[in-house]
Image (cartoon, rainbow, N blue to C red; front, side, top):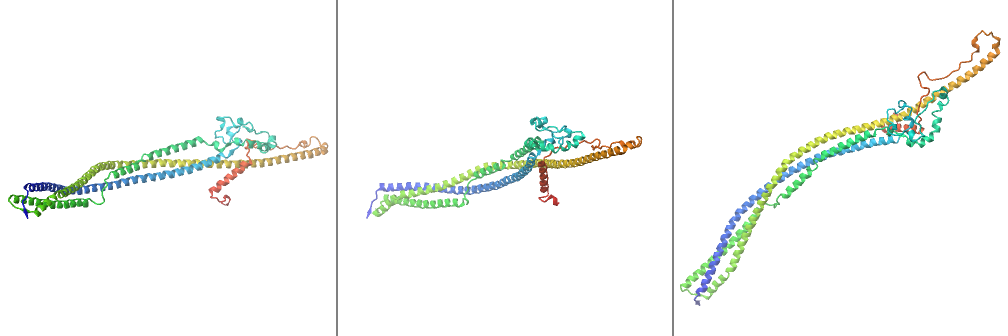
Length: 504
């Protein structure tokens, strides 16, 4: 059954359809513009990504060169440090050897007779400075130690008391000497400790100077490492894959949305055309059945859902566009930051040659200073050898003086025997002559052989003209002699590598 249409209602449907169509056209037009802009932006994003990646890779390559420079400087410093450590070990070794000799000198006593004499000219250590100039003598500090040694000049004292000088005196004074032995000087007292301290002070000052020279480049490796870390942290974090797929996915989503919007726009246009035709036909007297009227109402009621979908698609297209714009802005920000990074890298490139040159200068200067320090090691070694020779000479002196005492005692024993034998012969000869003169002298004329009444010649054994009556020799304990022999034997064993010196 055909029914006449309400023109006002139909006009309302036409108005709603027209508004929906116009809004749809606006949304589709806007979507088309945004889509075209997105294509251009996606091209920019890909280009900017390629540029950012190229700059980032170039910075990475430059950082590798910086790392090589830092490693080179570190290796050179480490090499120089090893040389310095080796020198420190050698210095400790030479110093310990010198200290060992000095401690040995400090443990070897020198009898007071060796340096307390009548005059410096007769002192065995006459060239050494005694403590008399700086303080009281041993005799003043301890009255039990004599500061002079008296030598008798008479033949009788030589033959009687003088021959006992080295025996009875040593025997009587043995306990006293042992008591005061700790007050004796040692070989160390004749060493110029101040000169040794001056040498070691010079060594320490030069060693500190070497540390100061090396410290000039201490911060170089750390500075380069910190700078490299700062530059690395400033580099943009780029995705592993280029943004091509990302932009393609966004453009594909926009195309899908645009296709959907175009379909909806066609539906809106078709609905508007249908409603407009219906209005014209209704005005011309055309009648519509109830089903047609319900269909027009139903189609018009679907307009809000279609518009909602169009708005959703338009928003999605805008969102894709915004993502591309954000990506472009991100890459532009990356490029801006990379320009500052490149400036920092250029500045670092200007500094690195200066660092390398400074390291080279420090290395040359350190080599020169190390050569000077090596000469100090030779000085320490020379001092040690000198003191070893000094101690060896003193031990030899002890043995030489002991040998001379044996020689003197043997010579004096021979003289004593000769004097005793001559005295006995003179006494016997005197008796024989007296007996002859008493028995036969009275029967001989007085003017015959006047010499028959002479007494026998008496003999006296004395040193040659110009020689001392009795050679002065310091009193040396057997303990010192034994110690000197042991030390010389130990030195010979050390020099021969532990072999028995007697077997060589």
